[in-house]
Image (cartoon, rainbow, N blue to C red; front, top):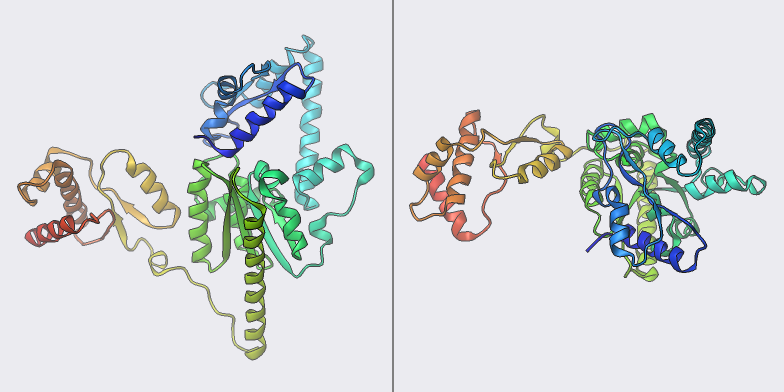
Length: 399
């Protein structure tokens, strides 16, 4: 099973094979273009996936961009691509310089004029059809931010005309690419604390930015079905929005979704935001002199480094668990690494007939408690009733 974007890409390649008069299909393998920020594993292996899944695959221009491992930058990759069409290095450098200049102007127009990708491209290639930005020209009272990958936001077939439908419901729409790069970087620090994917600017960075904008009534996060990175990011973003008392809805796109279901959810979300605005206006009119209510984070986020959440250091699952708890602002105490002392401690304080994993778990649990001289909150307690009773009995023996 693969994600929706790969299925769509493979479908486009198959169409070009059957109906397009093309000599090559541009299929780059992008690992990373920013230090310590990577692309999805499927897109890193995109040329190989397409060759393996599309019968009679047309020739691919499969350049690779890998800044860290192979030391191949965007410039190096383009020069390698250029040599397949021309051996004149001056011509290749001029083409690359011109492309970078156009890209800079294009990205600047997204931010300065609040344009979506299709609107900016239309201005770039059809300047005679230049019109005012819908986001700036709109007189709507309700503003909604929509974040997600461009292939999710602007493919009207798979997203059922999401942007157009929101505007039709009377909302002004802002998107992730409209956020200035420096503000997006600051937004990442407010949400996940670290840039892990090079497209984080239009995802976590944009959400962090829009959470601080009072004119934005709500946020819609759009993700593709079976997308691993997005599923983790959106869960963290939802927790951040909840802690701030802001409205965030996630929409999952797949090939089986219907327009009716999408429209229903959009209408309900817009209606909810409208009612929230009316309630705030009514409260303000009733008590104009009273200060606005303060939105506070949940108790466990308000306490600095309290409670400390302990987790047994068993296997590699702690890597993902540590990232999740760090993302929601909690401190995770993994305790010492697994050792003979840990196993002995667990065996001594556990029932004789219990399995080895439980002994390791209980040994880690006890060392987590003992290493801090207090009883932190412990995550990972067995959920089965017999194991809970064994856990409680063993804890009393230690106490």
